[in-house]
Length: 347
Image (cartoon, rainbow, N blue to C red; front, top):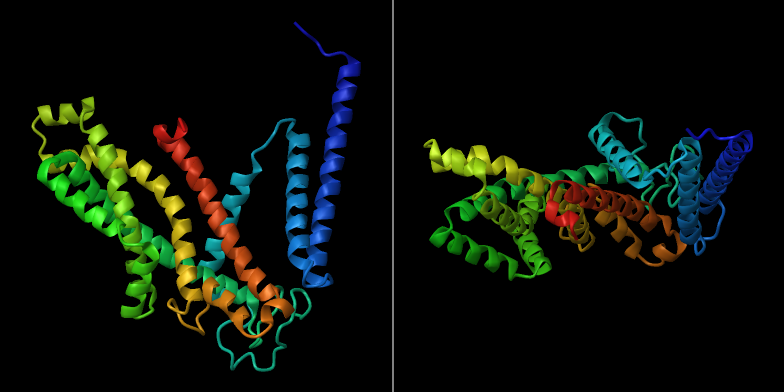
């Protein structure tokens, strides 16, 4: 049996110390860049320095974990999960968190306006043109985006999944009719469909969720239909038919549980697209109106005059929340697809 000699052990320990030191240096440099970007650097340099600081800090943390565990660690899924869990918890508990005023401009009349992040006491991410706290607005905006997108996806999974299972199991005329209706909805450009619905419906969370669900139902129908056709010929379905189970029992007890996993993995990716769609409608003035904050209408505040040039953090703060959330859902959704859907793993 091979026994490592003393020189090998010393070399391994030296390499480990070097990796830990290298990771610590990168982490410190990244944190310094992030702090400088939001405090003293000019507006034109701020976005570049912020992105560079985040990248360097991430590389430092990865290096530290690699040196500590002596193996590479896929840190991104962990960070994405932490971000989504933390954001959801903050959005859920937002009314009870010790946040500055972020929705009522009359209460914030005495607050400084357009304060950069970390400059004003009690305003970690700065204030907007009405003196409202950007952190509070971003967290309350997360409530709107998450509630609308999750509700729309839930409607799409339930309705589209059941319709797709019916089409895939019964086939024939039922399948053709459902396919024609699905293709008809898919033939309408999504943006035009959303703008048309937004101009008719009142801009409430419920109506926004119902409108966005129309984008998810057709894709869920197709996924559920394809998987139902594949599972309908499997042994456990044939056995259920042989013992006299009704068609509806076969669908609900045998097909739906097996179709659910591909639908759920697709739902995680769809959530990110719906968050972007909701933010786009709010940016265009067709979503949740002010003073209720959403990430889209927070970004639209920078359209007034030279706000974007003079106070870029007005866009960067909600844009960063939007980017991190969409990126996290996309990354975790793709990993879920590779894990739960064998066909995705082969791509």
